[in-house]
Length: 221
Image 1: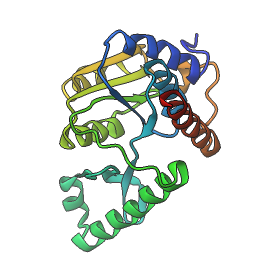
Image 2: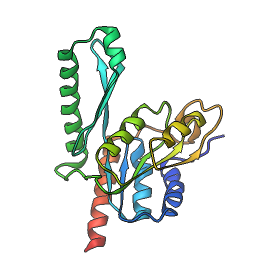
Image 3: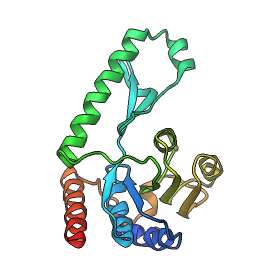
Image 4: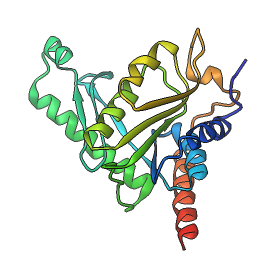
């Protein structure tokens, strides 16, 4: 039986759990696209604007589904490289740099598409809440947590709806606190734990980000 009705209902549950931490001036970041509806509910509960932490896989030349690392956006982008894989496949430095440049361009394009000219938030010294709709392998989340640490976040809270139980301890070593509402065994897949799990559209991402920013500005006024 599915644990959550949809992403928004999961977000409301997460919001209650995060609110209990009573974080000072929190920064809520979503991993798009599926994490955005979840994070929107958390940001609303904390009365703070919602923003994104974008992560892109670095694909092996000719095998883009195989990741040789990942890169994040942000004021100080973080790049994580699988040197052992690169060495075993004989990938040149030039090919690696070309893929990094390509993904940096794509990260910038996506941020412009989702947020326009809105300045990127600086996590330095902030209490950051990183939100996603679920974790399957943890690869993207690990890179995101590493990026927040390297950019000087004061506190990093990982808030997710569902994850495999075997991933929780490793992730707890990367964050100050991990909030996970459900850790079923067997896990199977993130979507199996939602009654409704349609793909989150770009239009929904843009709408929720705009509503978050607009409502926060209105409240501040």
